[in-house]
Length: 347
Image (cartoon, helix red, strand yellow):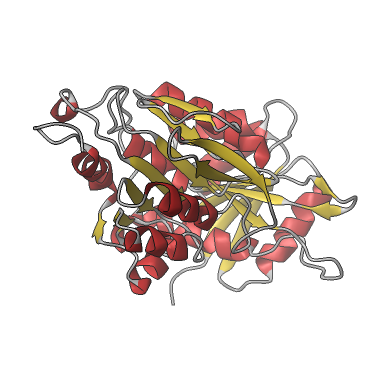
């Protein structure tokens, strides 16, 4: 049996610290080794205790959780789960997880069920395991020389990701040149984070990265990230492809859903598309990627060794939706390979 995941709980509320600690300690494979009430206490505790995982509140005195997170990831990269209590229909709580820089919805309680923290313990254990397996990609602000002469074809790229997806997306998109193919992304992420994440990607990557808006036209050199919240991202109109944000209930437990995006791309673009499924828990995106492959699209999956959680890519692979699996550091280049214009002209 592997050693328990060693966790530091950081929250300015003693009540929340106690509740999170109790939930985590109910799992014998999780060991809460300490607590901190603000960023300053947390910094000292991290140095003293060297935890495997930190749970971190978003709103704290002295320094908010997102600012502190950026410092953690710069000075000591480690798995961090952001925990935010927000009202939903009055008293319900929503938790948002950020694991190794990757946002993911942890859970929303069902009325009548006393489980406001969903599968938090499972997220903590997955994050702890990833600490031993995951290698943080090196930062880069320019596309590699190998794609300096990239000539874009006519394909649309659709990417789906979840747990571990933020750093995975950075690793993939930093390989893209400024004239990359139009790219749409659904990353499971709460609404309070998608805009800042899009801005972060825009700073780190050569193409323009923006949060998708309803009606935004798909253009070469632009990447569109699905906003978190109450709508799904789709693509529409073969004559003038654009983003469409549609109302609807959660699909596979998620809104926005990767399956909803992939389904729309399969119907709109068919063989003129590339589908990519990255690290994530669950099965969202697998059926949609299969639909894309059946429509003639090229399909790519992240391999098990480089996934933080080999869930979504595994299900997609087992369904036959994935044409070929690649390690994370090869996916960006493979996307460019299959979307480049042919030498004799555009595809």
